[in-house]
Length: 160
Image 1 (tube, rainbow, N blue to C red):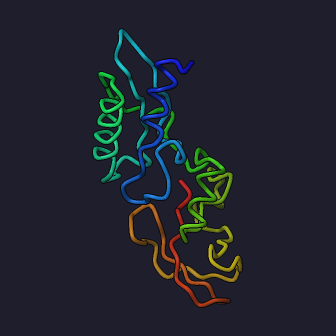
Image 2 (cartoon, rainbow, N blue to C red):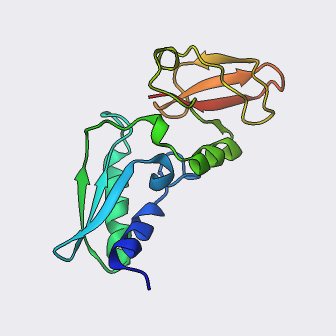
């Protein structure tokens, strides 16, 4: 039998990211936990960064998913410790790659990764001969790259 907490987690965890719909808030690791407190499903969420324009939308979508699942809902924004791309699940990284977005390097807190000194692998052909075209891609959390092997442009999810 599924507990109320498990049901609430499943409902919240299935919410897609509005900017990258191939991944869920659970895949990205921004859904920290969902607990039942005094009959209310409390979802604790961390934004990817403090200026993320999708944060309020994500919180509203999680609240709506919990209400559709039959819960009274409350969303709590958790800022500490801050979210890092290391929290993206393995499944989330594969979903990004399949969608055509190069996932961030593992160990994103490393100084070299933070300053863009990592190898970015093309999500289409797997080549590592790539070049940054722009620091900003389709959203502020992504940079635009081009593969020199297949000549295709692609987004790279920045390491945070």
